[in-house]
Length: 129
Image (cartoon, rainbow, N blue to C red; front, top):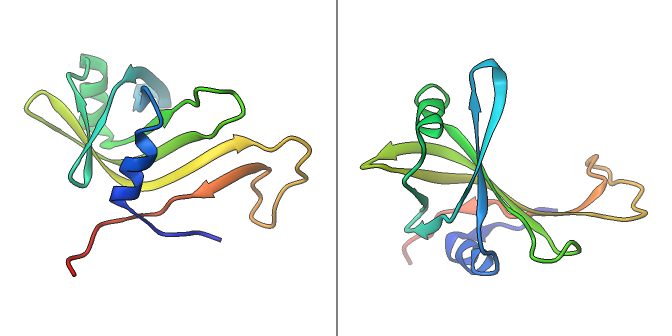
């Protein structure tokens, strides 16, 4: 079952993590991974001062994944996929999917095919009330 989570709840989740890995794809479909400290600004994640390889990758493939590793091996990893844009020397990522993930020891799998302990965090923009 998926539970929709508003962006302010994503911000609360992000506060539990110290840094993330930004994943982009380079020529030859190889991953490029760098450690970053993104912040949530409005409805986008802001990654300041991306390197030249990250910028070049996003020019041709404007999607990115951010992975926040857990502080403790038994905790969840936060994974956020999104559409990336470059502006003013920064990368912004508009989240399209967020999931908390950790291995589930002894878990036989689920009907969805996930053999791990996963919590889907669909990203839903705030609506004006």
